[in-house]
Length: 129
Image (cartoon, rainbow, N blue to C red; front, side, top):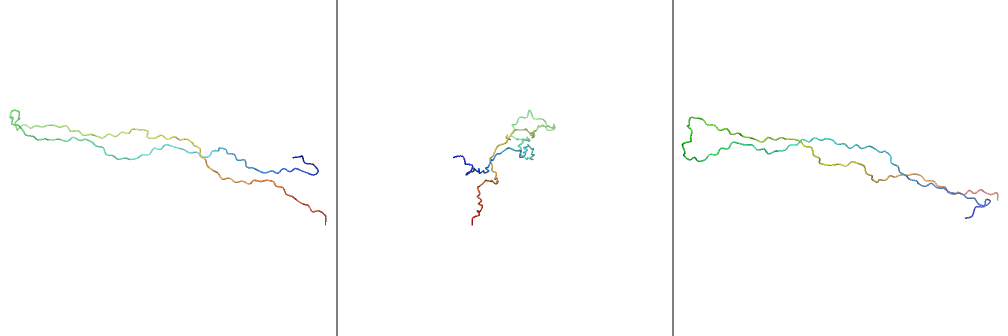
């Protein structure tokens, strides 16, 4: 293209706005993740052994030498036992939870007005009639 001749040509530069979109990281909010203690009442059954007296009768052979006289009382003490439940608590780890951040992609709808320049032609009337 040749340089404009100053007497017959002039150069106009037409300009337009374009979008320049950038992003920046800004503080948004704080999230607190805490460990709370939840109490739960539980009821459960435990099987316990209990001893009872067992009396077994059986036939007797007739041996009279070791039989005590009837007038002397005879007692046998049988010691009985029973199981007693003891409940204790033990802390165990049942889950591990990782807490951190991750990035997710979202969209934001923005709007703006763009301007541009256009040529307009103004004609001035002549004095010709």
